[in-house]
Image 1 (spheres, one colour):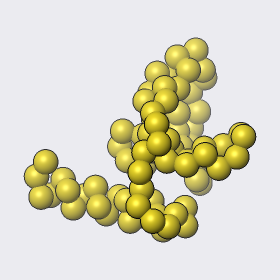
Image 2 (tube, helix red, strand yellow):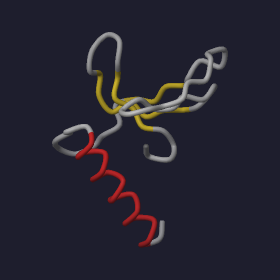
Image 3 (cartoon, rainbow, N blue to C red):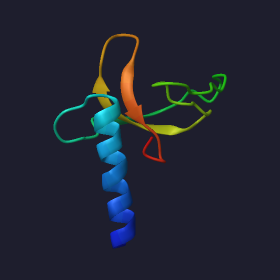
Image 4 (tube, rainbow, N blue to C red):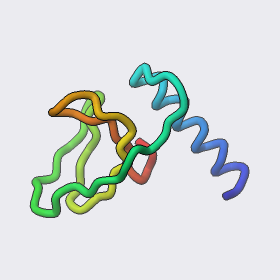
Length: 75
């Protein structure tokens, strides 16, 4: 990884922490795949756009209906 890529990832992590008021280090608990049969959803606000078969990093389990995730673009 180049220095430029590393700084870009650090910036994305800082923005993530600020947007979701997330304190501490961001650590991936597990990964999950969006159901390939699911309908694609457009994101908005704090909701992540979902694509079929996309792999997501699970950051935090917030409640039974929502989880805090990021996609491959670190969004």
